[in-house]
Amino acid sequence: MKNTKLNTELVKRLKSGDMVAFDAIYNIYCYKLHEFVVRYVKQQEDAEGIVQEVFIKIWEARGKIDVYASFESFLFTIAYNTTISLLRKRVSETKSREYLKSLQQIDTADKIIDEIQFKELNQKVQSLIKQLTSRQKEIYLLSREEGLTHKEIAQELSISENTVKNHLVSALKYLKSHLESSLAVNVLFLCLFL
Image 1 (tube, rainbow, N blue to C red):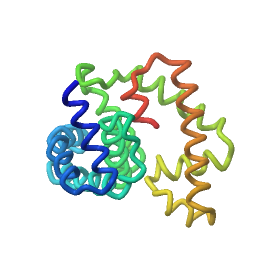
Image 2: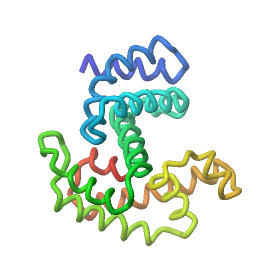
Image 3: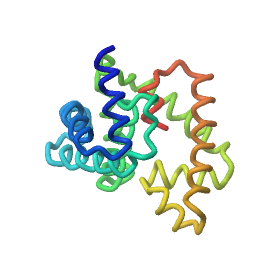
Image 4: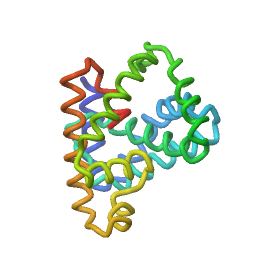
């Protein structure tokens, strides 16, 4: 309880641009985040680079952080998405599929579900993505599959960043509500896809 209060206070200070709070949060999470990322990339240098990139993204997005939501889930979602973007850039599509399958060997004690559940959820997500409007689907794929920022998507599609954000929020709400109602999956795993 004390740690949660402390973390909430640090996140509030981070949101207001307090660099000391940012350093404190970095010190609390950097090791845990590094261990999480290295399980995927298998190389210390890559993991260190991703951790640095995650904290740069946190600092840049500090004004948008919801202090009452789980900061740790927010942080690990960014780390996962950043890691997957790196893997996609480096590995051909066929090798990528094989590599992602091999990642499913991480045990359930680490809160990653087994391969059968992964495939089931992945199929469900792909099916739901097809049901999005064409613009939502396009923006979701640019954001989640290609790792583009809101600004980059806005430039590519010649629309405002606010329009990108609104479409992405709608798409994520739709996916999350349908996944939660149809599958018994934990919040961390939903975060990995959304």
